[in-house]
Image (cartoon, rainbow, N blue to C red; front, side):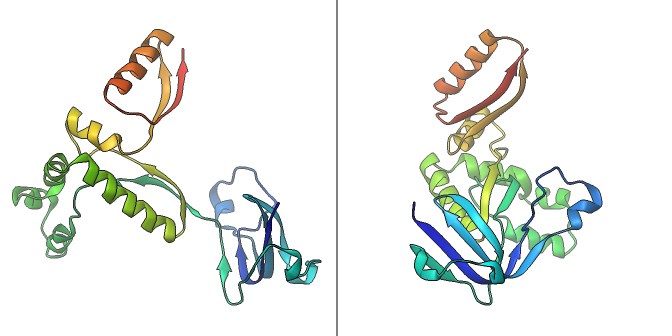
Length: 202
């Protein structure tokens, strides 16, 4: 399997051997290795450590990256986004700076109701294209896992258009397999194709 060597890394971040759940003050500890290397085989990390312990040459690898002066760190996991929306609200940010409340902004025609109106007036194809482009942007900035919420539709039709552009994740419990089947059929009828079913049947 082709392997990649990243060497001369200025700082390798979160190089930990502890994979247990961290809580409280333990979360403030971020193990790092200065002047480090990282070996990747396929999509797996095969090895890492200090450069003084590297027993391979760059020529031994199919790919080689010299990371002198660079930092290597894990990708971000963004657990709350509203990636699917029709237009930004940067104008409202200016109003907030000027001291207007959310209620005053809403009375001027802004706020979430304005966002919902814009979303419901935008085609599904355009929503998909916009969301896809935003996803590419956040990936380039280092995000490797992302959760995308709906919420701006405010109607069944609007929310359906919102979630059709991604994967719907179902969590929690449901009373029976019959109810689960009905739910899955309803999603299918709504043309929602990508369903990650994590529901537990009581």
